[in-house]
Length: 312
Image (tube, rainbow, N blue to C red; front, side, top):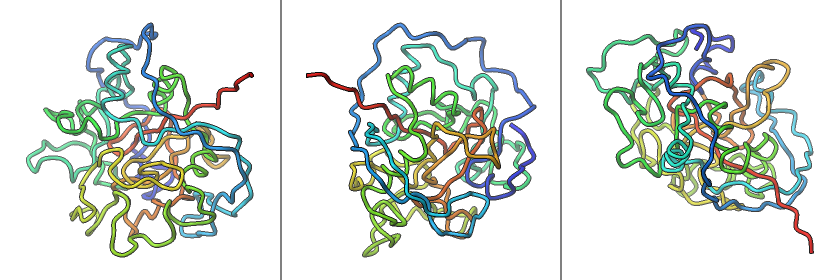
């Protein structure tokens, strides 16, 4: 991962920085192997094709390219009701022996607020010092050290790169959603709404997603019930049946960000670290990106697939 951030603080706070020239020692010498076992058949929602207004008029992050709003047609497709969980990814690794990017590189980015007070000093991202380089941080040791997945089997898998997400999707018989599909699904049938349920963040005082409350980055009050990740189905689904389309973890999409960052892949939805004071990207139209080999403790993904044609 590179320690200079070509996009400035906004990119670093949303998805850490990008992986680059420095290469740490891998945890072991295992290599990813081709799958020979039968993967599980996850329940995927079938969304009909349709036309919707993609993007927004939001101008806070002009470099993100949210606007202008435009009419987009999406073909029918399938998408998971929730992000890939730790239990799901455990099954994938057990079946294939796959080694993630973070494992091969020997480290990943962890939000400092989730580390113990006496955690040994490690390098931080200059533009976003809350991101710490943690040796040994991987999908199964989310905070490095002796951390584990106890009690987090139903939480979204994190510390997975776009390359890792693609490998899982291929094994599961699907793919990553493209950006238009993701936004169409996240909106839940609400045209132009800011969030998957409407325009109000906490209607009636009710929290409907997992984001950062309190003063970032010093203290997350956890008013929504969680500090860090939440279970993949922690909040009520939107109109299309998707849980946590915004908040919780950033979700990789298949396509490239665009001409301004052609080497980076799209990420959508925001995460548990998003706060309106610095990263108001937990909205349906919000965008971010990172390099395909980057990983962090707030990036996961959701499985999609084509609609299988039937003949009668």
